[in-house]
Image 1 (cartoon, rainbow, N blue to C red):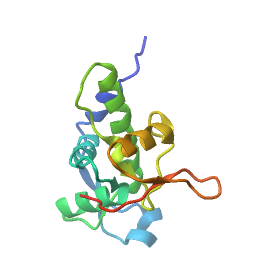
Image 2: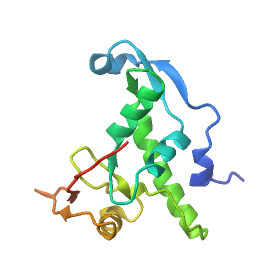
Image 3: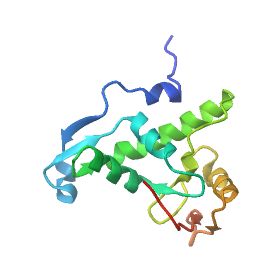
Image 4: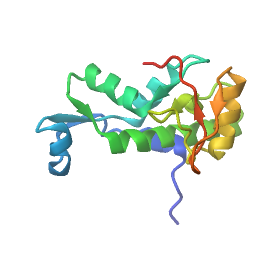
Length: 154
């Protein structure tokens, strides 16, 4: 019988990070250069560095990691997936009784829009951001709400 890996187990990928050529379908956007495929643990580390009361975006995480590895680009697809894995692992940690979990709710889209795929959806993310003093405004035309971003890191 095959058992599913926990979210925390998915965070430990011994084959990452690694540098690869930019995929051909992405070269129009990023050029013919090296691209970082980050590790889930590094993405989680970036999220953990965001202090209470501040937010960051996947783009900022990608830019930070690209600078760290001296490459032009960090893979947008895997970085987004790893943010989601970090969020699920954090909730798994909370269910296991850990008090200090990765503050994934501090990651928002570039325009401040909340992530509906995070555990608990935009409602939980909204509640956690409000509890940290953020102002949330309703989304327009059926879009999720967004945080009014005054500061962002890394």
